[in-house]
Length: 422
Image (tube, rainbow, N blue to C red; front, side):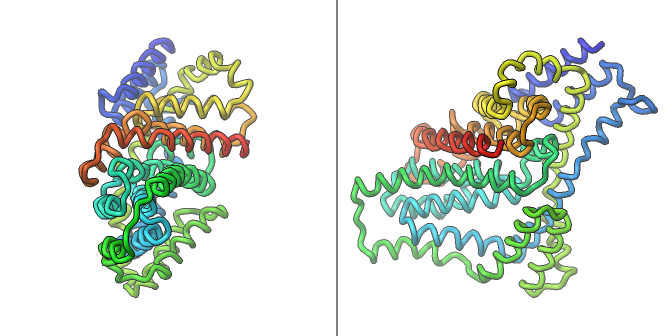
């Protein structure tokens, strides 16, 4: 019976990796069939039941995610989030010219994606792309750096299902893993920025001060109804709160109340805004439950033990670095951070059985695929493919070619980070 269950689970993983079937439905249905085939009853007093496996998937990280989304709901509706994004773009334009505008646009889009659950670089690229091009930056390279936003949204955010499943599997919480993700993602954007600045100097693009001011006027005309200082304080409270280990759900609610006070709106109105934000929980909730349920089934039908025996020689040398390599390969092959979970989560379970830092293992597991999923095409569905249409005269193949050295640079940064932590 276990052999049949293992075969069903293997077929499920292959289907998830290929992307030919609905990802989350495949994980849930395949895992359920495998559990039943293994002889686990649906419910009852047995030590392992399908019901107990599902209940074990209800991890506290789901409550943490809800707390963040409550906060984001009120930040968006009050205009505070826009104030932060605007400031990021304006700082980038003042510090770094064309490359600075493009890098800031990427950062802003990544922040939005990491908080709301869907990273869409085109949101800011439609403004920052043309401005950077007018300041002399190659359109393909503008599109390339702008689409790095996906790295920040997926690895430095709070809502991507793969990151949530990794956090739950490793038994850690929001905090350091998000800071590591943000640092690595910003290193990718930073590498592209430095490459563009070096190119800018060698090409000697010269514009008069009047021309530059005219180009930047469009950025400065962005709505500025809210004060950046007031907007950033609740965000800092949220970050400090979860970084020191306070319950993220409670910290999220507290930070939301602070937003309501600063925005001078009633708590009743703030509650409505918060609930609008938490509506986004649907996809990451189902995905996280599905991935964790799948992980539990994989463990209990013996696949983890088989994989552990196969990889034991390598894992005995450096479990965390092997985890990073497997995750990066998963992202490269699947070109999907979500689909990579089918490989990453079972392997992370094995790695955690060794004497490793859970944080280092989680960073390696979540980071490798979040970085390398964009290497071959810039992202087959979102990211670069949706950025190209809003960046005039850009072309996907050349934009992706520009991205690749920076992506590998980010992977190298993550390599040294996990090595240091472990």
